[in-house]
Image (tube, rainbow, N blue to C red):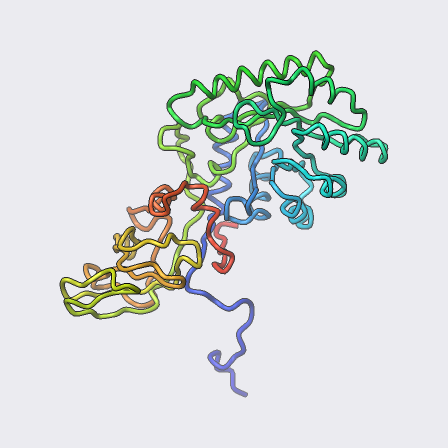
Length: 384
């Protein structure tokens, strides 16, 4: 009988030498630090939308709830259903706005939903009346973001209309800051004043919500006067700050890294070019490493910009990033070889490539970077 492992049939999922690495121990520590920074009576809501900003909503939500979070929030019914299917029974808030064909699913999944439209509020009240149990909603107030929510200017009218709907339970009232993470806080404070006025008018109409919340990660860090009953954090839980100027929490660690192994090395002579369009030309004898990851995985489609960490040092990206591969200059790293680990986002040795660094390449923001890694990159979890 041949027991040679090389002849054994493989099991599990096929490997890929490029992956997203998620440090669940770092995530747990981040939640503990955020929780410790809040007053004892303030609840913590974890925004786990878009697969928890790329790290996996189910695993991240389990860690969050075990280390300080009280509630969860997602954007779509499908995201809520995935959490429920995984056995998560914590309160879940649906952000955004619902359409009529989604309303029965809100009740079916046992979630709470934001409402910023009288027509939807009336329809949900009808659902609650028919079922003999109020549908719990969070009243969304538009204080200046001008995306979702009831307009703060018209609060007298819509507050009276909501108060007259018997099939609703008012689980919360919330707003959202348009700019809470910059040095200038004037508009954020204007929004908070508008929000406070709306809360007063709602109380006069007889609406006294269980929870009041206005702060995202930036508001949590820099606007303690707006903490109310609940603060919402998403990006910050990953150890990524919403801006370069907001307050820092000592000890936060980066949770998500992007890694690949060197799949090939090309030896170039002076004058040789690299990649489509021949955008990079060797000026000396060069060693070019090929990483099996490209814009098809979510890395920015750049030319001769950025770097990877190999052996704890920066290896510049050369030529154009392709769909499935990118090339780095290993000439000054003579010990680097095929199979070596490269880091495209995260830390290696004393060097680090941050989400903000990649955002500069992408001409975008950190949120876009973290949520942009495609499903064909396997997720590897550490510290479970």
